[in-house]
Length: 157
Image (cartoon, rainbow, N blue to C red; front, side):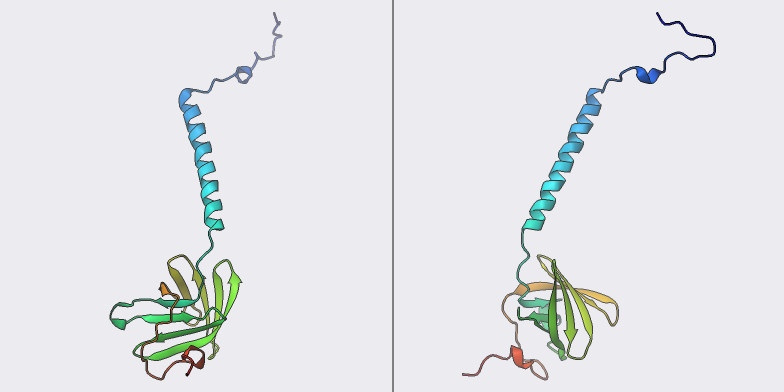
Protein backbone atom coordinates (compact mmCIF):
# COMPACT_ATOMS: atom_id res chain seq x y z
CA UNK A 1 0.00 0.00 0.00
CA UNK A 2 1.20 3.47 -0.92
CA UNK A 3 1.78 5.88 1.82
CA UNK A 4 0.39 9.37 1.22
CA UNK A 5 2.68 12.04 2.52
CA UNK A 6 1.32 15.18 4.10
CA UNK A 7 0.82 17.90 1.47
CA UNK A 8 0.51 15.40 -1.42
CA UNK A 9 -2.69 14.46 -3.16
CA UNK A 10 -4.43 11.20 -3.71
CA UNK A 11 -4.17 9.67 -7.23
CA UNK A 12 -6.25 11.56 -9.79
CA UNK A 13 -9.55 10.19 -10.99
CA UNK A 14 -8.30 10.35 -14.59
CA UNK A 15 -6.19 7.30 -13.97
CA UNK A 16 -9.38 5.25 -13.86
CA UNK A 17 -10.49 3.84 -17.22
CA UNK A 18 -13.85 5.11 -18.41
CA UNK A 19 -16.15 2.71 -20.20
CA UNK A 20 -17.93 3.69 -23.41
CA UNK A 21 -21.65 3.13 -23.21
CA UNK A 22 -23.73 1.42 -25.89
CA UNK A 23 -25.25 4.76 -26.93
CA UNK A 24 -21.80 6.26 -27.43
CA UNK A 25 -20.78 3.26 -29.58
CA UNK A 26 -23.85 3.76 -31.75
CA UNK A 27 -23.00 7.45 -32.25
CA UNK A 28 -19.39 6.60 -33.16
CA UNK A 29 -20.43 3.91 -35.66
CA UNK A 30 -23.07 6.18 -37.26
CA UNK A 31 -20.55 9.03 -37.51
CA UNK A 32 -18.00 6.80 -39.25
CA UNK A 33 -20.69 5.48 -41.61
CA UNK A 34 -21.78 9.03 -42.46
CA UNK A 35 -18.20 10.07 -43.26
CA UNK A 36 -17.68 7.02 -45.50
CA UNK A 37 -20.98 7.71 -47.30
CA UNK A 38 -20.04 11.37 -47.83
CA UNK A 39 -16.61 10.43 -49.21
CA UNK A 40 -18.13 7.90 -51.65
CA UNK A 41 -20.75 10.43 -52.86
CA UNK A 42 -18.12 13.12 -53.44
CA UNK A 43 -15.98 10.64 -55.40
CA UNK A 44 -18.92 9.48 -57.53
CA UNK A 45 -20.09 13.03 -58.30
CA UNK A 46 -16.61 14.04 -59.43
CA UNK A 47 -16.18 11.01 -61.65
CA UNK A 48 -19.41 11.61 -63.65
CA UNK A 49 -18.60 14.04 -66.47
CA UNK A 50 -20.82 17.00 -67.23
CA UNK A 51 -22.68 16.98 -70.56
CA UNK A 52 -21.11 18.79 -73.51
CA UNK A 53 -21.63 22.54 -73.55
CA UNK A 54 -22.64 22.52 -77.24
CA UNK A 55 -26.32 23.27 -77.80
CA UNK A 56 -29.16 25.64 -76.99
CA UNK A 57 -30.11 26.93 -73.54
CA UNK A 58 -33.05 29.14 -72.56
CA UNK A 59 -34.22 31.15 -69.53
CA UNK A 60 -37.94 30.71 -70.30
CA UNK A 61 -38.92 28.86 -73.46
CA UNK A 62 -42.66 29.29 -72.91
CA UNK A 63 -44.26 31.49 -75.58
CA UNK A 64 -40.81 32.43 -76.91
CA UNK A 65 -40.30 35.12 -74.28
CA UNK A 66 -37.02 33.83 -72.94
CA UNK A 67 -33.42 34.67 -73.64
CA UNK A 68 -31.55 32.01 -75.59
CA UNK A 69 -27.89 31.04 -75.39
CA UNK A 70 -26.23 28.95 -78.11
CA UNK A 71 -22.79 27.32 -77.87
CA UNK A 72 -21.24 25.72 -80.94
CA UNK A 73 -18.74 23.58 -78.99
CA UNK A 74 -15.89 25.14 -81.00
CA UNK A 75 -15.40 28.29 -78.92
CA UNK A 76 -18.30 30.51 -80.10
CA UNK A 77 -21.50 31.62 -78.36
CA UNK A 78 -24.56 33.70 -79.21
CA UNK A 79 -27.17 35.19 -76.86
CA UNK A 80 -30.48 36.37 -78.35
CA UNK A 81 -34.19 36.93 -77.80
CA UNK A 82 -36.90 36.35 -80.38
CA UNK A 83 -38.07 39.96 -80.08
CA UNK A 84 -34.75 41.88 -79.92
CA UNK A 85 -32.53 39.60 -82.00
CA UNK A 86 -28.85 38.96 -81.22
CA UNK A 87 -27.75 40.55 -77.95
CA UNK A 88 -24.21 39.16 -77.88
CA UNK A 89 -22.00 37.12 -80.17
CA UNK A 90 -18.46 36.17 -79.29
CA UNK A 91 -15.94 33.64 -78.04
CA UNK A 92 -16.13 31.07 -75.27
CA UNK A 93 -13.02 29.98 -73.33
CA UNK A 94 -13.11 26.76 -71.28
CA UNK A 95 -11.54 27.41 -67.86
CA UNK A 96 -12.05 23.82 -66.68
CA UNK A 97 -14.37 22.19 -64.15
CA UNK A 98 -17.52 23.49 -65.86
CA UNK A 99 -16.43 27.15 -65.84
CA UNK A 100 -16.26 29.32 -68.97
CA UNK A 101 -15.31 32.89 -69.79
CA UNK A 102 -17.36 34.54 -72.55
CA UNK A 103 -16.26 37.66 -74.42
CA UNK A 104 -18.68 39.25 -76.83
CA UNK A 105 -17.50 41.00 -79.98
CA UNK A 106 -18.57 44.21 -78.22
CA UNK A 107 -16.05 43.38 -75.45
CA UNK A 108 -18.69 42.65 -72.84
CA UNK A 109 -17.60 39.90 -70.43
CA UNK A 110 -19.64 37.05 -69.01
CA UNK A 111 -18.89 34.04 -66.86
CA UNK A 112 -20.68 30.71 -67.20
CA UNK A 113 -20.94 27.93 -64.65
CA UNK A 114 -22.30 24.67 -66.06
CA UNK A 115 -24.28 22.02 -64.17
CA UNK A 116 -26.29 18.97 -65.27
CA UNK A 117 -29.53 20.90 -65.97
CA UNK A 118 -28.05 23.91 -67.76
CA UNK A 119 -25.78 26.90 -67.27
CA UNK A 120 -25.68 29.90 -64.96
CA UNK A 121 -24.72 33.09 -66.82
CA UNK A 122 -23.11 35.87 -64.78
CA UNK A 123 -23.14 39.27 -66.48
CA UNK A 124 -20.10 41.33 -65.53
CA UNK A 125 -21.61 44.64 -66.65
CA UNK A 126 -24.61 44.73 -64.34
CA UNK A 127 -23.66 42.04 -61.76
CA UNK A 128 -26.68 39.90 -62.55
CA UNK A 129 -27.04 36.14 -62.88
CA UNK A 130 -29.54 34.02 -64.83
CA UNK A 131 -30.12 30.29 -65.17
CA UNK A 132 -30.44 28.90 -68.71
CA UNK A 133 -32.02 25.44 -68.91
CA UNK A 134 -30.53 23.06 -71.48
CA UNK A 135 -32.90 22.47 -74.39
CA UNK A 136 -30.63 20.09 -76.29
CA UNK A 137 -27.62 19.82 -78.58
CA UNK A 138 -29.54 21.27 -81.51
CA UNK A 139 -29.61 24.97 -82.37
CA UNK A 140 -33.01 26.62 -81.85
CA UNK A 141 -33.10 29.07 -84.75
CA UNK A 142 -36.43 30.84 -85.23
CA UNK A 143 -36.63 33.97 -87.35
CA UNK A 144 -35.31 36.84 -85.30
CA UNK A 145 -34.81 40.53 -86.09
CA UNK A 146 -31.44 41.26 -87.68
CA UNK A 147 -30.53 37.64 -88.41
CA UNK A 148 -27.87 35.39 -86.96
CA UNK A 149 -24.07 35.58 -86.93
CA UNK A 150 -22.39 33.91 -89.91
CA UNK A 151 -21.14 30.93 -87.87
CA UNK A 152 -24.74 30.00 -86.97
CA UNK A 153 -26.23 30.23 -90.46
CA UNK A 154 -26.87 26.86 -92.10
CA UNK A 155 -24.58 26.03 -95.03
CA UNK A 156 -25.98 26.93 -98.47
CA UNK A 157 -26.58 24.13 -100.92
